[in-house]
Image (cartoon, rainbow over all chains, first blue to last red; front, side, top):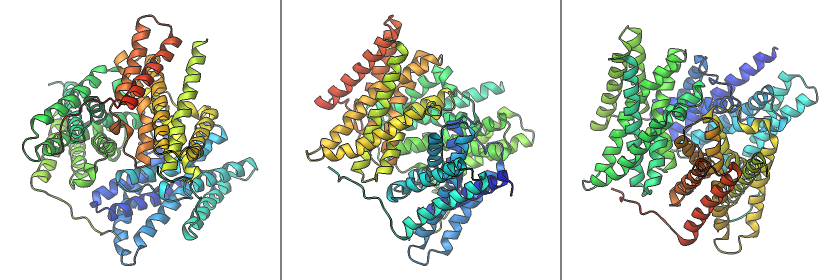
Amino acid sequence: MNVTLVFIILNYIGIFVFALSGGILSARKHLDPFGAAVIGAVTGMGGGTMRDVLLGRLPVYWIDAPHYLLLALVGGVVGYYGSELIRGEEGARYRALIWADSAGLAVFCVLGAQAGLIAGAHWSIALVTGVMSAAFGGLVRDIILNDVPLILRADVYALAALFGALVYVGALEFGVPTGSAAVGAALAAFVLRGCAIIFKWSIPPIGRVD
Amino acid sequence: MNVTLVFIILNYIGIFVFALSGGILSARKHLDPFGAAVIGAVTGMGGGTMRDVLLGRLPVYWIDAPHYLLLALVGGVVGYYGSELIRGEEGARYRALIWADSAGLAVFCVLGAQAGLIAGAHWSIALVTGVMSAAFGGLVRDIILNDVPLILRADVYALAALFGALVYVGALEFGVPTGSAAVGAALAAFVLRGCAIIFKWSIPPIGRVD
Amino acid sequence: MNVTLVFIILNYIGIFVFALSGGILSARKHLDPFGAAVIGAVTGMGGGTMRDVLLGRLPVYWIDAPHYLLLALVGGVVGYYGSELIRGEEGARYRALIWADSAGLAVFCVLGAQAGLIAGAHWSIALVTGVMSAAFGGLVRDIILNDVPLILRADVYALAALFGALVYVGALEFGVPTGSAAVGAALAAFVLRGCAIIFKWSIPPIGRVD
């Protein structure tokens, strides 16, 4: 399978699942459908937008490619109305939000690291662009909707994104083909984050409020 | 009347009324006058700044044009002290905030759409740059001042901005002269948002917290 | 001492102390160490990143210079674990946060103004890039961590940054050598902010909530 195609598909997946999470949270916060579509677009395209701005790849990627926007809007609306279907079961909607967010996180940490490497940045900086691409969309979603950012609530969140970016950069270093490295690293990040959700893994914080 | 002049005047109006809204909210939140001027500048120039960054028009427009900054600072201070004059009547200050914000929204959805079209973007993307330019300044104002974003409280908010951008893009498509299209679309957005405020129009949301 | 070296050292100091403040607040908010490192990086590099984006100096400065990132990460972790050592005394951690933030504010208002002048902006715009560089990192830190922004709580905050930028621009105008002007202006801003903290100076706000 063509490497470019792998990245295109990963990008579509990431945008859609992040947009889903934006739509679900919009439903929880009683926004109207238009608001949900806007939040879906911001969540789905926020991380990539931030990445492009910092790397100087302007105009940002979706300006010349309306289908990304369409995908994110559809994702937001699907998440919004879809969350209606599953709200019967207790906590189901919150779980759907968490898992959609995790899938987006897993994909975007790899895409962000890849963008950093392509821009000629040092591998340590590629880790940063990876973590930022993964975290930014969800962070903006939570800030706009006045929710406690998941990055603060979920212990293994930034760490899972860092892990995914590290696996990707490391795999390339060891000669793993780019496409396989990308898919494998995204899966690694998703598994780590997923285990943290299921088994309630956390890193002990220090300190109490004084 | 010259088309360029129409856009320049609309831009001045938009910056000033958004800055007013920033100054009014700063007074409600007990900031000092310097804080109000800063929030005025951020609210008045935030949307256009975001638009320029995403489209790659850097440095952003106000770097080379200090009079925009001056206008926004003055708007912030006028809103701050002006809101003192009207606080006698119950809820008057909040209403002034809402209406100043609505006027800014109406103007910037058109200016943002126009910027997108000039940058050669697809019309659907021009709608996005319109909505974003209209919503971003007020969103940042509300986030910094720790207020529930108007875009979440007001049902017909993102929708009014989308409507204004759509009227503008549509009018150009049907051959309406640019200047008339801009003024007409801004008025259309303002009337829609105004009616929503006066008649408490809203789009029914779905879902309850689970 | 070489002028360039003065700015490099000031930049290192500013990044480190802002990152410290991010780490301290992360400890107060019970983040894990990875979260603290991320918040440290965002706080330490946020202001300079914003400045570079608005001025069109892309990619932003830290993309090609991983040691800035390393410094900010270390600052965040040092602030996180260091705040543990001092939490015995009541309010000590909050005071450490306030002072680290003030030192960062003092340094970055000068660096931001300098960046504006180098970009050929009007002196009034250089004041804005100064205030923004000084305030942005801390603002993002407080917004992400869901704390009331210091810029809202501390009366002489934006004003101290403005003062530092003004002293710097004014000193250059009067022929003061660049390096001395930078150090002197940073000290001036720090002294003003420090006096405001110690003596609880504030500017009387107007208005009450209506």
